[in-house]
Length: 441
Image (tube, rainbow, N blue to C red; front, top):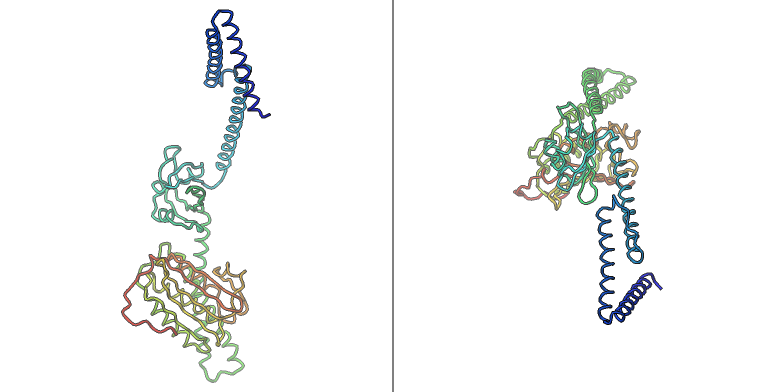
């Protein structure tokens, strides 16, 4: 028999016992119903008294012990006491966890700010208060963009992708801060804040050193190249001397290319703001790039796939530099029997894509994540023979970053590679197609 059935039988037997006692008292008093009513009244009064004791204890349970009542009321009170103890245990455990979490986040060197779906501050630790100048409870409930007043930070909050942190320099105090958003449940987000002043200072020193060293190398290289050209222009030069001088000239040209690439990277690194928004005719650039490849000796075939006349809004010299580097890479790694395809297309969401596909040797998957690193080469020996500096893709990535664009690389070893530049819709301008589309070649 279950506990509930036993309880029901117990209550029924107690009720029958009370009724029997009332009927017996009624017979003694000469009125059966009077006895029954009196017994039920006494039973009701007892239940009300127990209910009063229970209510009084629930209201003041922190100051009084639970009432010692037998029977069903005692069982009810025991269960309430167990529930109360369990609740108090879980509450204390939760408070302990929250206390440990607060202590651990306070010990972090990085600032942590909890934002709700409206970007309002719900909690922050002490490092965040120190780095952002937040003030206790007074700033809770305020939008973080009202406290960190910077257009770049406001744009960063509106993004849907937070893989890359945002670095801003603040004048009061004079520090460089790195901001990164970490979304989690129910639209809430963590804003991680880190002081990167030292790293920014070291990066600035590195850029200045590379720029200064490259600039200083340019003058002696120009002198060496000029003297080599003068020597090689002498028809009376002996053949056993001409060959070493030609090799010296080739290496000097290669070093001069590296210096120019380093200077381009230094210029791009110094460009903190986004690129300009001049109209760039990508169709005309594709024609120029194709013509340049066809003018080289031993070139592969070049095909154009122009699917739109939309124009880019950006820095034309930078765009040309990035596209030229992609085409140069394709030419260097594609045999004469291969094909290079230049494609310019408009995507359904309004973005635009420029891609360079080749039928060269392809790239192994383990090399893809590091392709845009400076001086990184997939095949060192082959790249040096082709005159590569290992800086081309770094320049491409830097140019695209200043245009809010990204680069995607798809490659299959033995089947070729495709380098795609994806430009956001805000960098694309749709124009009327006033001329007949050029045939895809």
